[in-house]
Length: 252
Image (cartoon, rainbow, N blue to C red; front, side, top):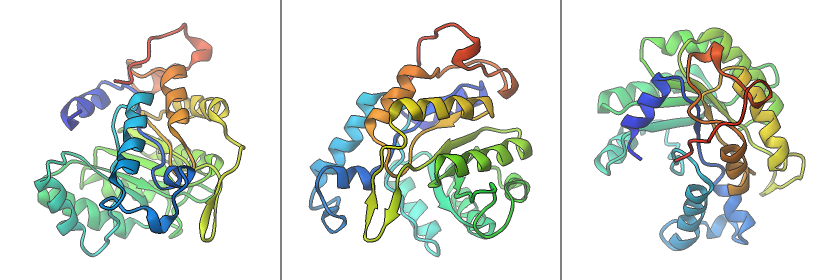
């Protein structure tokens, strides 16, 4: 799906479902980090993306290229390859976000920015989500999100974003934790519990939902099956399953 229809759906106040984790899903499929090379093992990575498509994800986030000083070069290469949206994710400071969004603007690609929140909902730099939203407002990212934090920390960050921003916001937490040198999987958030958490995200105004490290195609399928994309109206009118009848999910 090209970005044009997705941008229009955001403007209409609809809810989108992103894909889930790639790196930790590679581990689940019995490969080590050293093995996870797109060129040498392309079928494994392709199969993961295909599983998220089958699960019903609206939009697939590419494996992130986190080259900070080379944002412009990286985004330029993505544009030449046909990319029409850049998701700048796992950002830890406003300065980094500014550099990345400015690069995207120079290239002419729309972008979303996703920050890593701490337990108080602030950036790890100590800056607040409100500061981040104000600073980036003039640069015009289409959406601000939080990711790569446990659900409770991500929820705190989303709450701060919701209070500071009127435009689209989103969230995709991780589940489990990093235990060097690998990711440690836990059963704290099976798909059903993840959906329950996500209902709270909708209540806070999130339009973009997905999953970060530790999530699987099963988590995304549950979001698409049990949450409702295509919810009309502004953020304050978004309803959850508890106060509305069944809807047909739009996770195309």
